[in-house]
Amino acid sequence: MVPEQITHDIFVAATPEKVWTLLTEADQIAKWFAFDGAEIDLRPGGALTMTWKEHGVYTAIIETIAPPHTFAYRWARLPGELPGHGNSTLVTFTIQPEGNGVRLSVTESGFRDLDLPEAEQATWAGDNMQGWQGGFVTLLTVVNTPGEASLEAVPGVGVA
Image (cartoon, rainbow, N blue to C red; front, side, top):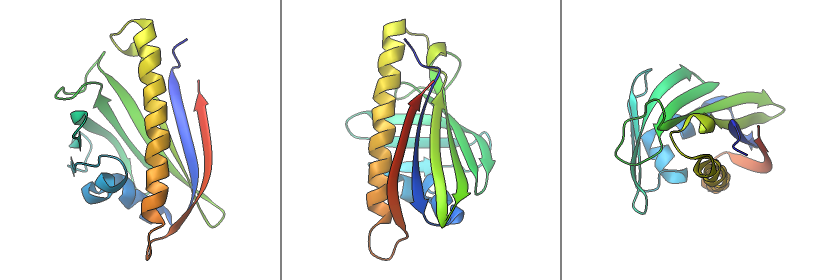
């Protein structure tokens, strides 16, 4: 069965503003997610490009910017494509204050709308869930470097 969306979240012992920079500044995105570089035009309709040597260059179009709580973009499924109907999913990050830090969540939706056979849609959703889990583990490592805010890994994963 193809999930409509996947979700992953962690508790971050940092300010919402600190977490916001990790999600919206190119040099920070490259540290925890797009390891071979990122570029961002941080405005609705602006482009976000993310590069991985082993996967290629992926393009996203920013949809929502509500600092420091919500950041969303639609990204193309394949490298070298612009996101559009049938070839992209919507990625939404939310940052909510919680105790002495924040709850950082990523929800990726639209897998059932991809122009792919159902089995490939399900595979894509599963692969992306693993990707977000790995990305958040790396985010924890990056932020736990000396001089940075600390993160506590309290993962939550879901499919709907």
